Image (cartoon, rainbow, N blue to C red; front, side, top):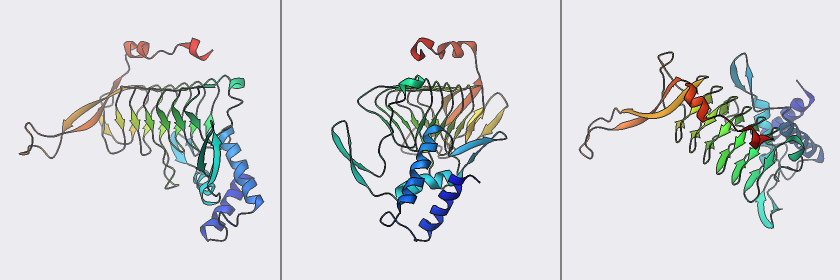
Length: 278
């Protein structure tokens, strides 16, 4: 157990039993939380990790994020000439250019404690929440949200108006994961700890959530909560158990996701223009 993990664990126990509050937290506690946020932004600690092929939540990291809400008062802060009120400031993005990343103005918000890698592009308006991890070379397009603790891999393309949910609590649950090389079409939604396998291409307006089945035509199986690697996926509608009803004709349908093999045409359509990342 690292020193930082030990300190966060001790703070959590004190907070959980009511020994400390936002009003009574010491300077040492504040210093621990600052060091923790620095480690998140540096990518040294993550809310979830892939261990032996399985994504597992780091409960102590998620507790550390929660402590920033429990042990910090809400304060007025300034951004762009506007006063806002929060327990956390926004991230310092002044070093983005040095590592090849860029964030466009007027609405691109990265909260303190979010990791944004090298050679990333963040288009306004976009929001990256505390505890999120955005890998190298990833594009976060306009009107995108990357939720708290969400894990986004390297060279991912998040199409415009895409929502990546988080899962901050319960702490034992792994958050949404989008693995390396994935391309999500405009308007996609990924929620509730769903895992998108590497190099997959997902059609626009597709909803990926554990409650919606994924019909994997490659392995001929029905999956929940995950899309395997190297798939092309899109929404289709299947018959609902509601069936016929007096209020509508032709039966009721519910959404499902169909996954097939990637095709050369699909890969060509999602090819990244490297000039955008130079």
